[in-house]
Length: 178
Image 1 (cartoon, rainbow, N blue to C red):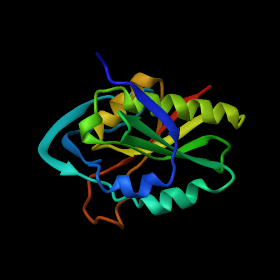
Image 2 (image 1 turned 180 degrees about the vertical axis):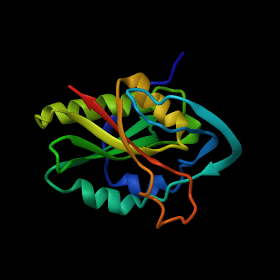
Image 3 (image 1 turned 30 degrees about the vertical axis):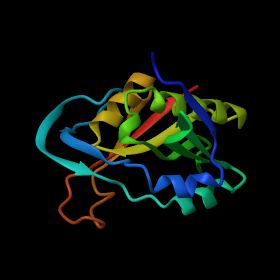
Image 4 (image 1 turned 45 degrees about the horizontal axis):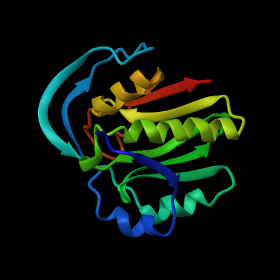
């Protein structure tokens, strides 16, 4: 029997529960240029390491209070399993500002349920689709976006270069048009 994933707006529990989750992921491969889309293309294995993005649950909560933003959580058996932060981007698309699934809840349909809710939210806002950015070393997420129907539409080789000199991470931009 598969888990039942409940998606709901974030509430006061979010900040407290966030600390009990592990949103890291293992990097074992990375996407290779030329990034011509619509899909990811070739990947190459790399020496495995764990990657964690720093997110501040209070900042996510504060940002979701803005008029053109939202923060939804996924729960399995009442426990926080993931979240998605959304806003209206400058170009009129909904933007996924952040999406994460707890390591214990992966492969349970959490990411799909969160993205389904993002699509609903964007439609409710009258927006033409969703855009998001991820990195070339997050191949699992890229493959999920591709399966969901997103199109790889661009990249930026230098976006992270000032944050992490010498990084090989490349920003990849994905669009899902309605």
